[in-house]
Each structure stands twice: as structure tokens, then as C-alpha cells.
Image (cartoon, rainbow, N blue to C red; front, side):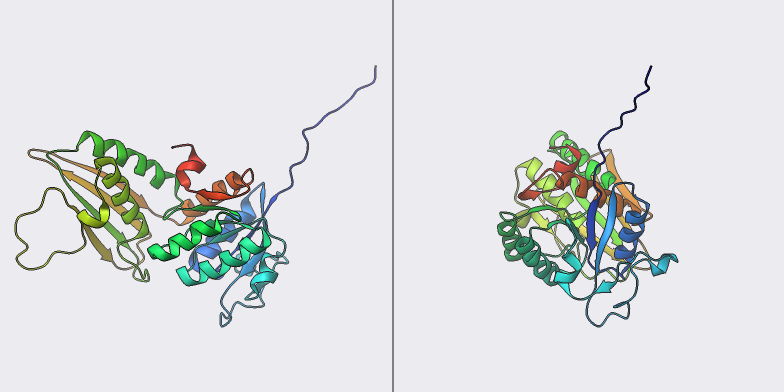
Length: 278
């Protein structure tokens, strides 16, 4: 008898470039890629005046990857299937223009886009596949689904307040995640967040309008990201909270988005699509 062996076909790893490679989130993404079985770092990008330009992308981990951090966008994307971008709106838009030209897909964790910038990104999704979400954490996106359910069940008799806290370095407020929570709740209630959101209270504000959704923002220290939605009724209140203790959750969610994009050619997607929550 002749013994035979068989094995599953080898799947090539997903080649991933990281924007903002020397930043806090960039380094977390690079560390997650190094630990991944099916994703590999293929490019590392940073701004021209970054002191990390010209260094190995995994030097901070005490390893050599052979991937050099560069400010040359085309060079950084040359070997990439997907770009992961957690930078600033203007930079992300410039990156996406080149991604669309080169056929590179993208996972966008950047927040703070204007409506006009979001329209521009939607147009670019006709040329390549994009996953865009204000928060890549799997837990946060499950929380968003829970908020949708809660808002529908608590549609009358409950005041809704969203409280978020982040580190002192965050430049936009409220956070993109808090705004997404507000959008999910408003949509579930048949409201327009632009018309019902209240972003600050000071002085004699008068009695609370029950149709509004309030936002409160805290900035300080090294808080990674805390979000609480309060449904306050008469005699009871319900709080739905998500707390991040590490950016690793954002990195792992981003890699799930990379895997999802493998089967997509063009289009705009979010983490609900990635997680099958739609």
C-alpha cells in the first residue's frame, strides 16, 4: 500500500500597509500584524518630518522586518493589498486618492471627517473597496447593535445622554464613536441627529427637551476610550457602557476588516458588514 498525503491549498497572506506607522495606533497595528498568521506588514507610512522616517517599522519591538518607514506614499503602497489608516482627515483623503488609483483597498479608522469629505470618500469607494468605521473594536460594534435595540424599546419616557472620555491628545470632540452611537439611536427613533443633538449645556438652559440626545465630553490623562449611553426614565435608568483598556481591540478589529475586504472589489462597508450585524 502506498501512503498518500494531502493538504489544503496555501493562502497567500494579506499584505497590509500602515499609515501613521510611528504613532500609538500605528505601532499597535504593526504589533498585531507581526503576531498574525494570515496578515503581513508590507509598507509603513509616516509624515515627512517624522524622526522615524528611514527606520525599520518593527525596530520598536526589537525586531527587523525589512519594511522601512517612508513618507513616499506610492512606495509605501507598492506591495500592499490593503492600507490601514488611523491618521487625520486630510491625510487620509490624500492616501485614499492614491489607493483608488493603484487598486489598493483600505480600512479607515480616522475620525473627524466633514460631510463633504465623507461624500468624497463615498465616491472613491466606486473605484476600490473601503471599510470605514469610527471605531474598529468588535465590542463597540456589538454595543452599537445593543443601543439600536434599546432605543427602539425605550422610545418614549426616557431621556438619552451620551458620555465619552478620551486621552488628552485627542483632537476632535465628541468622539467619532459617540457620534456614531447618537446616529444609531436617532435612526432607531426616526430622528435626525443633526436636529436633536445637544453638545453642551451652560447657564440657564431651561427644562430638558425630551426629543434631544445629549453629549458630554471628557478629555484627560491616557484614557483609551470610555463610552456610556444613559437612558434615564422615571424610577429607573439603564446604562450601556463600553470601556477600552487597550488599543489592541482596535487593531484586531482592523485585521478582521482586512480579511473581509479580500472578497470585495469595490464599495463602502462598515464594521456591521464585517461582523455580519446588518
